[in-house]
Amino acid sequence: MYSSGAKDVDYVLTTREICRLIKSEQINVHALPEEDFDSPLGSGSGAAVIFGATGGVMEAALRTCYKVVTGKNPYADSFSSVRGLDGWKEADFNIGGTIIHTAVASGLGNARKLIRAIRSGSVQYDFVEIMACPGGCAGGGGQPIHDGCELAGERGEKLYQIDKNNPIRFSHENPDVITLYEEYFEKPCSHLAHELLHTDHHGWEMPRAVKMDGDVTGYR
Image (cartoon, rainbow, N blue to C red):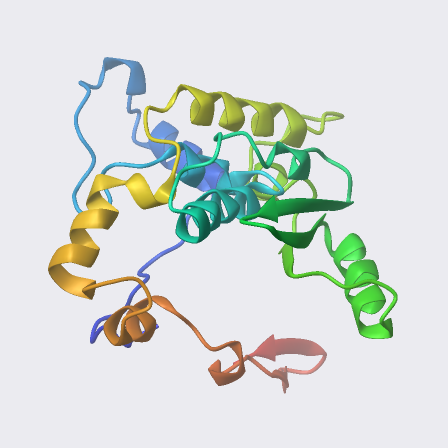
């Protein structure tokens, strides 16, 4: 998280926290003038938007994988069979003559079942996506809470609508991303891109439980 020479992430705010912040400052968002996002990464693709729904990361990646393998873009919704709120979904896709076996799980209970099946050898996949929250980030704990309602599905559908209406539906066509690679990273999977954009989960210093003040368990 410090490989760039500066801290990559300063703060993380949930949707509910941002809503409370706006309300506490009495900001009327409807009265704010429209303006562009900061650059770089001020522009976004439809593929980026659907990251918030279960299956969205895989679908976005497969769109670009198809382009890399075949040299042409697929129909943007070619991989929509990974969508939906089923806790464990499977789908096969033909990309350039190669069949890709995929699986998508959301919710830690479903993730546990899928991982156990992979470890036992009863299933085998080429690409697996797991999201901790049921329905993906759209159903995350930091989203607005409505008593008695689970809105992950409705929020996910809104994300797919935004994707469908976006003039850019492929990650590899995002102009800011293209410029970053041309002017800084050189090319995808370059040494610099790998150093700054990739992470090693085995290299993380994970927190360990320690006893603090009697019966209270803390982490450091």
